Length: 357
Image 1 (cartoon, rainbow, N blue to C red):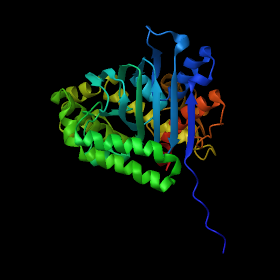
Image 2: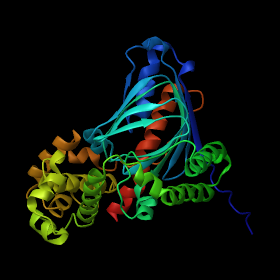
Image 3: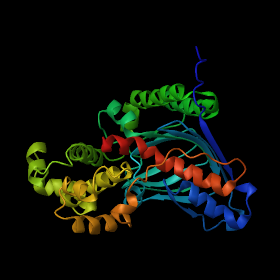
Image 4: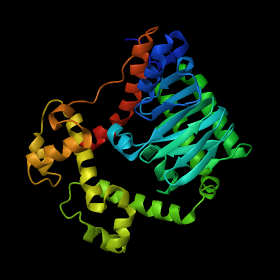
């Protein structure tokens, strides 16, 4: 009887800008973090002295990392979120430093010992001091059902609370222990983080500064979830949504005003789904036209124009773009930066494959 096969090890990568010439550091840093944020160094700092390090472990459909760096601006716009396609939450705790800025329209001020949650489908803009943090990026469907679809973007557990200490300690332990875990053990640890967030939800919800904004965001998320489940349904119209959710067309429009209204949002999400189907179909089992027509586009030419406007590429260029988790060549800092970026980008692989199924 053959010996049992050892489970595959957790993939790891480390990037330390100190090993690179100063002229290359900012470019490598931006390359590694581009799937999550656009980076601008603090104008008061000497660009040649920019520093930073990332130690990351790939947990299948999640990623845990410890990051340290100098002052900089982190920005994630709606356009950036659409382009990168991540449908994940980021759970983060600070061991040193602070972030100040905004999550959507809500101001945020985060410091040492705080734990906060970012929705990577939404806008974020923060200014960071010199910092060290632990970050867990986890699929939306590992957290959202536990908090029953509520709005959580930017919600914070403050340093000193029992829930913040518990979650921060769990994230730090996971970051340290990740190299010794199996993928099954890592998945259980990620699930545990989601349960801790759910258990602390009352405190997170009360940290929201605007109850009205939270109610609107929750309504929007409920409608968004319905839209995503019915993208191939030709009856998906504003009139149908208004009847189902018992709201006026004007109210529905206001929920999606930033995207140009609910019709524009539906069209955009259909394009996102078509891109997912193309990316997960390298064997060309379905034609571009079949995918486009099944999602309400009147012609392949119209679909191609809309696809290029949204993604900056032709539909054929998106075909088969899902890649396996890349390795990070030891000692090769440019390649390591690319590998970390690809790790983050391929976290959406499970969601795309589910969409293709």
